[in-house]
Amino acid sequence: RLRPCSPSPPAYSAWAAKMSVGERPPEQPAAVQAAGFTAAASEPLFARLLEKYRVPLLAICLPVSFLYGCYTQARRWLARALQRVPATHDERVRAVAQALQARAALPPERRRKIVTDRPITDQLTTGFFNKADKFRVPTSALHHILELDTERRVLRTEPMVSVEEATNFLVPRGFVLASHLEFGRATLGGLAMAVGMTTHAHITGLYQETVVSYEVVLATGEVLRVMQDGPHADLFRALPWSHGTLCVLVSLELQVIPAKRYIRLQYIPVSGQEALMREIRERCGALDPEAEVPEFCEATLFAKDRGVLTIGHFDNGRGPGDSAKVNALARWYKPWWYKHVEGYAQGGKPGEELVPVWDYILRHTRSIFWVIELMVPYGNHPLFRYLFGWLLPLDVTFMKLTTTEGVRRLTFMKQVFQDITLPMTDMEEAVNLAAECFDVWPLLIYPCKEFDHGPIAGQLRPPRPEQLCPGSRYPQWGMFFDLGLYGAPGYLLREEPYNPSNAFRRFIDFVKRVGGHPFLYADQFFTEEEFEEFFDLALWRKCRAKYHADGNFPTLWEKVRPEVDILKIGDVTLFENKKHA
Image (cartoon, rainbow, N blue to C red; front, side, top):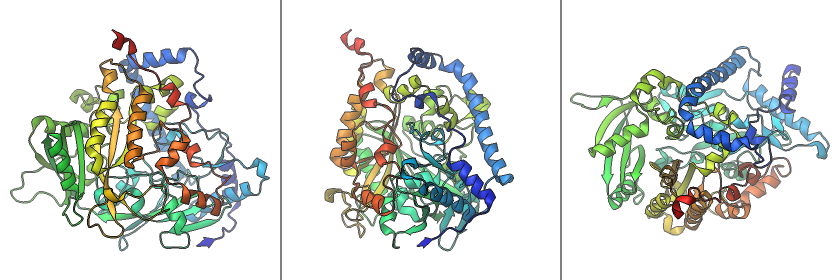
């Protein structure tokens, strides 16, 4: 449905114009300011010093990061309290539409490509897409929860609302999002334009399967409500994984599910790869569409043949004779989640506990899954947790603002940050190959349904016939899983030869062969031609032409490609001298 935008008050027009023309230059870290790695000679030295002396440096960085996070939260609160932004959702949408209409009225040679005004340093990506020469649309004010419809079980929200803010709003009202990302800083709009999933994904599928509708603004300033069965159904299917290359998202409706006070978690340690893989498949219902499955299911692997399966159900609390203890595991003084799970793997005995819903959903936030251990190696020590655990996590914006070119190299030369969905039919090979290529532990496994919506139904190619679950009804589905790889390769920790490009290329060839999908927030070790082999861009291209995105928004490859030639830079064998020795 198309609805025109009526003129807004002059104050809002001025605000929109100020934001859209980019009166303030975006915050650009040193890593973005040069095309390619033209670093000064001191950059590699700085990176080495940062690695060697990170413990004393963190004594400065941790409190500064904490204060910076407090500053950004206070700034947002003041903007709301002082009404520095339009007061209602319609007025905020009108400001976005008018900014785009003003751009459309410019001569073609003056129309810069459209991006949001969200600083790249505030986005959960490893790369640095340069927005300095783009037309920045005022979306930073779109951070309001609009409505919870308890009858339809739908949350209507603006895109800049974070997972943590949505959780804080929903849990006291007895609901949680049907899908999201288990990291509090992720925004709901960012997940909608990219991808997200949780330990509930073996029931719901990816985040995109839980979106009811989108409200978007086209490059012409026209506002559309996009639904699965509406007149813009093609755009509905093309928006996931589009990364802001089709239109500007201004609100969305998401499915929510009823929640109880706790989640009763069971920790099941398993030894032996055959038993471990079988347990994962059986528990998530990968082979039987009628199987009774837990509401939450995940596995954490600490070796190829050793891991812990964690399953959970909503629960109201302890009853008579119930021995399960309550564990508020997201509190700042508690052990990091994966370290807590590792205790069950080491002990070899199953366990059960009641975890408050809020703590379970945000359990990975403090340690950013297990990335923080690279930066704060002593962060899980009991003394540090009790005295300074409240300083964590490091603020993402602060970390990206202080990223130099030398430090940027470390993110793909000496570390691995990847999420990749793969068919569960190839889980053993995926785990074994990941161990050979990277030797990064633990590994994260989230079972996830991927549905066959037919040909030309979006960027994701449908599961292959042999990957579909026997007996699954329309739409048919296959059980995939997210393989999370985060950390420093074991080869480097042992100072053994390691070539980043060769390792990633070998693994990504496997992903392509089995029909997997790399998450595009991470650095991609493939070319544009190979990118189009992973994803089906036919519908995306049709929507680019139909909805006036061609020439007005960056292309998908422009948005997700690394800003540096990581294939070339990463084609270096580290510790090669050790091999010769």
